[in-house]
Image 1 (cartoon, one colour):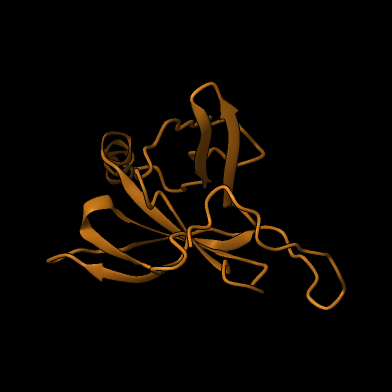
Image 2 (cartoon, rainbow, N blue to C red):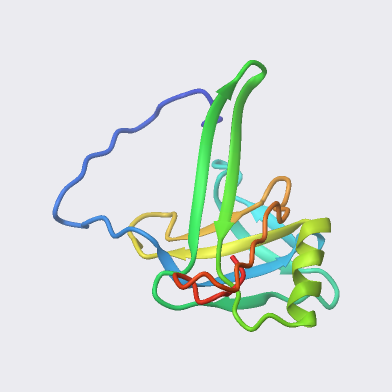
Length: 153
């Protein structure tokens, strides 16, 4: 039975498992074609396996003080629902290597794994870009920004 277009459960908020917002200060990013995904046959929203293709690598980006954020948006359009995913993180230590990585993210497609602070249920760990990959759409560096100490955002 497909889960699409059918509501099949309800939810409630309570004190047993209080909601904790945000994600951990770590994001794992890998090239879209470097990892093969295996999905749950009865629920295509659940990834049950990640398999490296050849000499694939997963890159770990670490932050501090809630400097990372993950956003999922659903908006209705004339041709149907549009689902967008965003990963927002800061990069310190601007160098030519960092610039090269940002350029690679802007021209290639990547996937990202984030770990939610709220770990109850089957979405404690989320994969972003599973279907079409993620593309860097914006990178900004303001050297005089005291709020982020001049790092790239």
